[in-house]
Length: 143
Length: 143
DNA sequence: ATGAGTGCAAACAATTTGCAATCAG
DNA sequence: CTGATTGCAAATTGTTTGCACTCAT
Image 1 (cartoon, protein in one colour):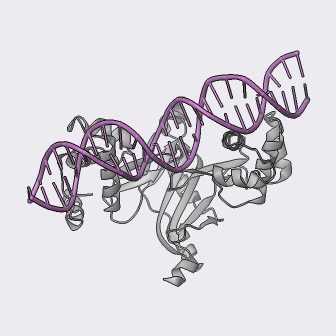
Image 2: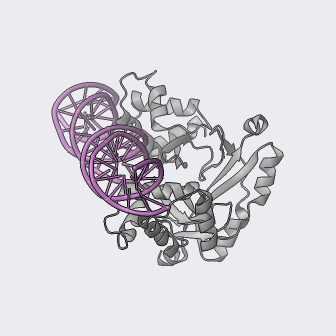
Image 3: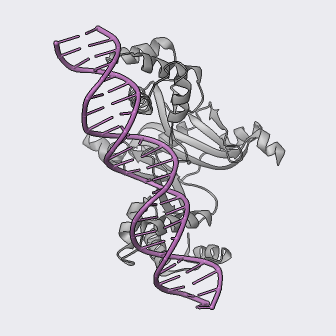
């Protein structure tokens, strides 16, 4: 997602860009493609805004998610993770390595067939999320 | 999943089948295809084992998941839901209605193409989970 | 100055753990 | 008997909220 587009989303929403929010947004931009927990973000963002509180982190991440600047996702570990949006409307698809926990993106969107099938049954598909559980190349090699 | 197979999994694991565990397992069998939270299971199972505690429910659900008798899944609401396994190795795929929250199963497995792609990149795919966000036929109609 | 935004601490929700009492083999 | 299992309550974890204070306009 481009800076221009992020800006546009924030402006549309009349969202005041304070130091804390700037710091959090910077962290998210520096970690494109990674899936950070609120604690991860807090730790990183405190380097720029030392007395940032966890409540502000949650409030900001939730707001940014509602503006579609961030994705808010939950994996099997049961806590939320946030990531800068890459395209306009869709969530990403992920591969989670069962050995090391590394999370990789799946770039392709190979789900249109399935989507069509559901639509033929009367559903209106809005979004989807695919998670593959795998051993990543490194871990596969080590075994 | 057949009773026979469930039994087999429990025996393999040397798992003592107490009244409480029996009650919980019964609830899961009576709710095939549904995704129950720990509280849901507690409420149902207490009809059979009245002073069942929530801790036992969690302990049992986790054990049964680790024996591959149950799936343990987390949706965006951020809490765990459990469901009787249907086949041997794979999770199910779900459609979540964005209006009413109804969760429907996707029976088909249309993901083999993607799986092959990942394998060609060196991953060893073990399992996968697909969640579609949609408006279900009823809600679509109401709009 | 005024309302939006903050940090802190307390509240909450879901889950886990410690422990003494109980149960099954 | 003996170790596994239980229910309860307390502890933990991740997240949310209330509130007095602070900041940006």
